[in-house]
View 1 (tube, rainbow, N blue to C red):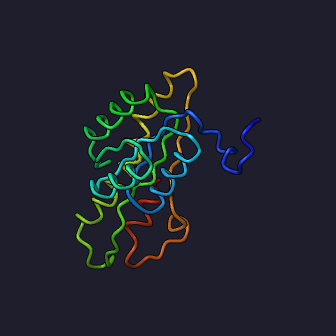
View 2: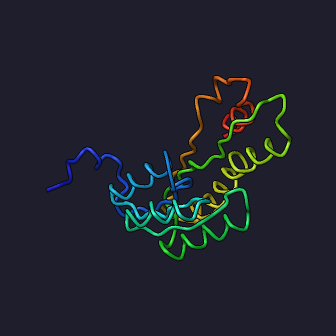
Length: 167
């Protein structure tokens, strides 16, 4: 008998996935759901305590990674290849999220927002695409943005709004 559960529509059974921001929030929920539908998931987050707890709850592997750091991103994909043999799905959920007053925000705050949210998404996509295009099965990439990209708040969120628009 086939699986007729509502979760079977995801079609991820046996697929390998990387989920960034998997230590909390939407990333954790996404990674957890992927494991529930049968995917093998590498939980990725910059917070070692959060990602280990989330991954262990799902009996999944994890890695600590600052996605704005190219060497760490490459190492993450090397780990995924060693664990799974490839990567079928990348869910880019991680983002830096700290409010800062537009008029007094130091440029360093702008830079870290874009380094993680926009550059990190690019680095993760680039490494995933390298693997996926060499696989006979291809793959899928999901980038999580925000309504803030279309409806910026102008003050206290300018760096986040523009970074999510970049995603």
